[in-house]
View (cartoon, rainbow, N blue to C red):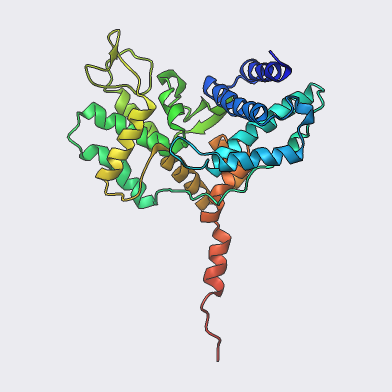
Length: 312
């Protein structure tokens, strides 16, 4: 094992043990950084990170930009940035251990086009929430699906966070609960009266002993006699199904409801820092993607000054 391989192994162990990153995150970092190491070796460059400089970093970025995927397409800019973020994190780790490496701050990311956020208008949210009751499904499924939709819009949960919920996690009397999100970070989320009522209505029809907040209600979906919890894919499918049933033309996913939650808060006057905390975003930059669609001040300026006739 050369020094480069040892440093990489130490870094991945650090992510798992000290930083408590998920296995999926660790595997992604391993993939991106192994690709970087292979690039170094294949191009005859030095295998020592302390010799990495801006010139060969620029060559690496050019190589990433021209790299073709299995579908003969170039890597997307965000995928290129994932490679650079992994490299920057690795350099930061090595610098903290007093190794002479290039400054992590010199690894700049590619400029990304402004992201378009899809969200539902208030009327669309109402139509989506009403959709389960209009189906021919068993009552328990109607109540379950209404509770899922209410909870997604009430809390802004990620679909993985929702599927991991246990009944004991949700304190309906307190109207708030703690959820463990990305990076195992904890945050408080709040239940609307509608979500709380929907959960009570659903649980009142449950006769099983499964600890999961939401379960399958078919004979095939059992585990030792108790129903299995829902998967993220099954929740995605039911959201898509009810969006179509409600006549919503745009593509709707569980994350669309998370966007709708954030947009609703900002439109009604919530400050960006509070929304950042409620969404569980590490960086305010992630939350600021919503501000261009919720800038009330600009709307007031437009109403006040646009197309005004001069008094004669």
